[in-house]
Image (cartoon, rainbow, N blue to C red; front, side):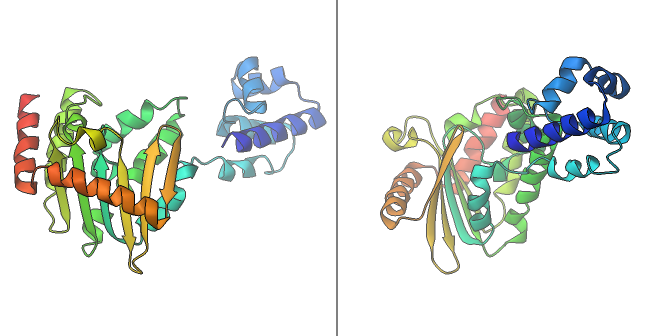
Length: 264
């Protein structure tokens, strides 16, 4: 996205210079400070629709600058996750373990927005809302794809964070209980202190396609990896299996989640 910002900002500068419009004049007409316009032209800030509209008119670009708006739309998912999302959309089974956070497929809108808004470096409001929308839309798979098996193992720690505040977290826990009701969805809780050697290594997602191709996806801040190598996938599958064996059953897990919610 930064490269797109730089390109669009540079186009504004080129058109402005060609038309003999100063940065001060453009800023005054668009109701922006000089430094704000400079930041947009240099790609340090996303060029706004307002600046593009005003620049297009003042510089006689005849819509050529406005055309940049199409390429400035925020991406619904980080680029590094796109391949994983494509495979997930076709998977016949998806099993995951989450160590610290509620997984995206189970998040409420309030929880998701609180998480995404706290990204660093900060995301602009448009990108936040687009990613929240995309995350909620992705959750439709739980009910729409009744033939796909979804398994979630949640570390107790993920249930006790206060993402979005106490009220938001209580609503999140109640939502998990509802999401786990369909026959193709299972939710288990790994109580604190169990299987520490593996449970503290981080989260993972295991996918299987209709062609029986198997993948494993692991993610950390600012990085992720989608594995198809049989040895790596097998090792992560065994690790997930050991974690799952130490987790509570679905019924016990539901009772556990209700108890945590009541404590809030």
